[in-house]
Image 1 (cartoon, rainbow, N blue to C red):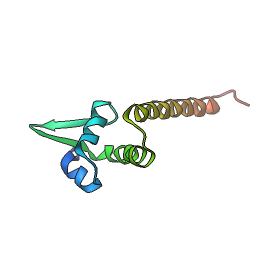
Image 2: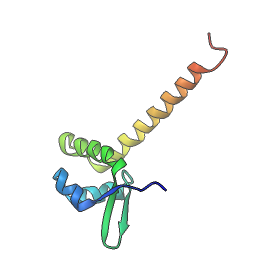
Image 3: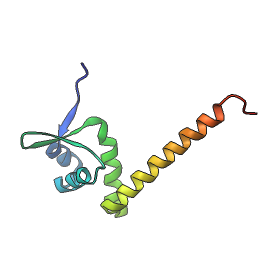
Length: 95
């Protein structure tokens, strides 16, 4: 069985020098998913690139949580459209 690798939110925030409340807000807005064990919250390693992306947008570009959520939605829509476009380009009968 595959082990899920995760880090505590406190350790993560110390490493990235961000506030715990920022990560909690990302979780509340559905941008990342935290897991909980007792009182402690954890973030999975595979979500760290998303966390870094949201940190840059929020702190460097001053984008609020609602803006981050909108950007996530738009990027997801772009990915879907690109996948559909590739599928159509690879379909048989195309000249």
